[in-house]
Image 1 (spheres, rainbow, N blue to C red):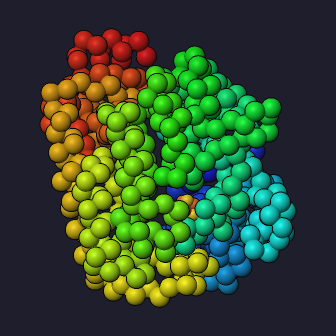
Image 2: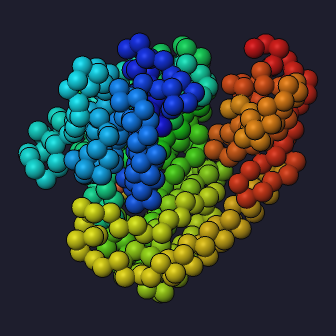
Image 3: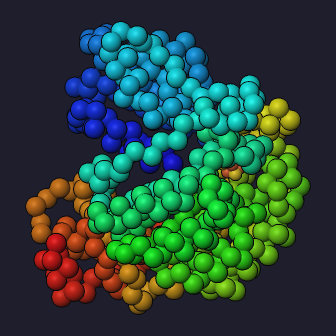
Length: 458
Ligand code: SF4
């Protein structure tokens, strides 16, 4: 979500006449788009702001801004801790960014522009204060023209007790389906092959603005008809909203990737209840089994939090059990990080020692990595169709002028594939034969004649 917000903010600024520079030393405006999900992310921003003090001393006209979730959560505190900041803009106010920068340039700073606190006003008024931001898309600001993210919802109404997102990103709002279809159609006309639909709980999407309500499965069916578009993905799904209709849409619509990210968070009913996730481990298993029966080739990924307040060894063992039997393609595993203003902080003591959190995190990761490796090994000798995203990190570091470099791409199931080829292959969809794997990456070889035809047709 933040990557998309940054892309849209950059596009707005380019249209307003700003140009990007390579080095903050030469910038007139320096903006941080921030995350509040973990304390560590916020600490890093305060350190980065501290390092900019000298720029502000040398060039007092430089505008420094903090955007996004941390701005909405920390509010005036940012100006107290970093008085050289000129602009604090919440995620619901990003649509106004160019105007706000102009006002600081005109001497009005510092400016703090935030949406209303969720608890401070009526639901409708708070919702209206989180402005929707869907400016025209600009291929030049995306890493590659052929891939794009499209937001279909704003905010979240779930209020999981550990999570700050509903407070900082505001009430759930679905964008009208008509607007989304028009945006994806324009992207496809402009050469985009793969679109990832985004929402905090993307599968609770429901547009009620037209004659008939439109759910995610209906939206996917409409988008599937768009000419030129080859792949459709969506993240992040909430287990409670995985419906049979949605599973059938993923199974039956040829452009929809058989890839679902459905965070489980814990395998213990007691902890799931404390987290207010709204399902039990048994219900999660049933949902997963429905996916596996309908779409055996589906890649399912998950998130887990270890060390949530009150998590006993027995609770944790139940999480190990769920993760071990679920055969996720991969899982993102986090140590619980208490966030001020969340229910978990109000209700529970952060009572699992950090050492235990770390042990549980490492053990769970090791189990998941072994599963991911076995899952990847099944690919050896098979052909994967990948969308080439460009030079790999290693190739970018090397920066030689070899014609053949290491490239990286992604399968429909979001597996990362590395192979050697010409840079011109970037943005093409190509079959690659997998020769070896590790837990996170498939290493392959592109058919040389096909690859060279594709590169030349670019
Ligand atoms: S569903 Fe829960 S974890 Fe996900 S964004 Fe909403 S409150 Fe946070």
